[in-house]
Amino acid sequence: MPKLIRWSLFVFILSAMCGAQAQNPQSCSQTEVNNAVNAAAAGATINVPSGNCSWSSLTISKGVTLQGAGQGKTNITLAGNITFNKASTVMRIDGFTFSVNGGGDSNKPIFIGGSWLNAQPIVFSNDTFNVSGSGLFRVGVPGGVIYSHDTFVGGWDDSFLQLKDPGDSQGSWSHADSIGTHDTNGTMNIYIEDSNFTGGTNQGIDCDDACRMVNRHNVFNNSESNSHGYDTSPFGMRQFEIYNNTFNNSRDSSQLSNENQAVWIRGGTGVIYNNQFADLAGNYWGDKPEIRLNIRGAEDVRPQGSCGQVSYPVPRQLGQNHNGSSYFTDPIYIWGNTGTVGISAAWEWGNPCGFSWNTFFQWGRDGVNTGAAKPGYTAYKYPHPLASGGSGGSSSGPSAPTGLQAITQ
Image 1 (cartoon, rainbow, N blue to C red):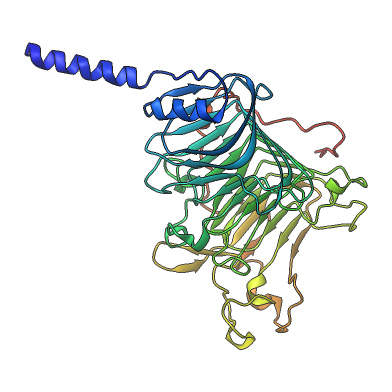
Image 2: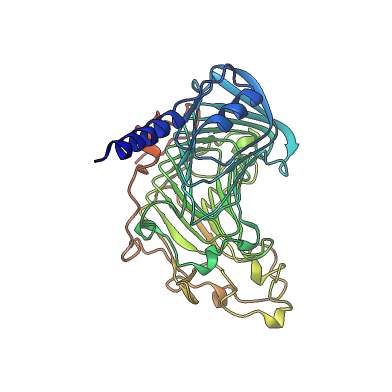
């Protein structure tokens, strides 16, 4: 190899190595962190030291690792809007405690954006999120976000994860599903795994427009996995996998125990299996179903128009899928769940048109609850390969705190 070429190659490699060197801001202040990100190359680590800081306006669109000193050590108060945009390299946020207080449900201080199909995932791992009187995440992409070994703590009506791409701007509903191993590279779905949710009883996780959610190996303490369909939302959830979770309820007179359901599905297709459910029979509203299935688009909110214009299937209703060319019926499968598993599949908002529920939902056609697994379904590998790149790479799930009703096998 000629000397000039060897020297050019050496300079190139050295520049790449220096560009990816870690950045070490002197504090956790927004200014210090922002400057470090600007100075970093893609793939670099930003080592954010211990401290108590407030972030009010920060945008990161580069595939770097924000490495905190650990939960309870690098503490960030969210006083404004923070944006993480997916990039060509995996982005990681690891070892922080984030807190937000006030602003109501409309306050979503952390926004996730970027390209769904043409960028790498963002991974939140080993983080704690404390929420009081507020929302938290607005995930504005259908997939490509991973939560692993995280802790979420909030009040009854606090929102942790709103998974919503308004107007399905990136075409999630017109792409074939990525359920299970259909997500070949693990980049098309939102994976929530090995995490602990306490509170957010009314809307802890809300899988809304276009979302592709995999909710697995988590512990929910007085918390629920919610959704929207094509009704009050213009598109509704695209697909879901909810499995190997533990849903606990304290069954006492506290507000947090006031659950209407543990899992609420209002559209799309997916699987619900091998979860453990506590009996939702608390002191507020009496006995409630653990799994609730509804089609609101054929009731008081009718996207199709008048009652006479509504017919089966309601667009993107329960048990509807899309193969990339057209919609087709693909039933929701429910199997292998333990504990108390009451399932309600019925109207919920009064049925002013006087429709028959069986016209729009039939077991065997739109849902299967016979104990049989979904034919051909295989879950995507667990733990997620990208999640193991964080500092908490254990494959075991979190433990439930004491004081909550545990499920006995």
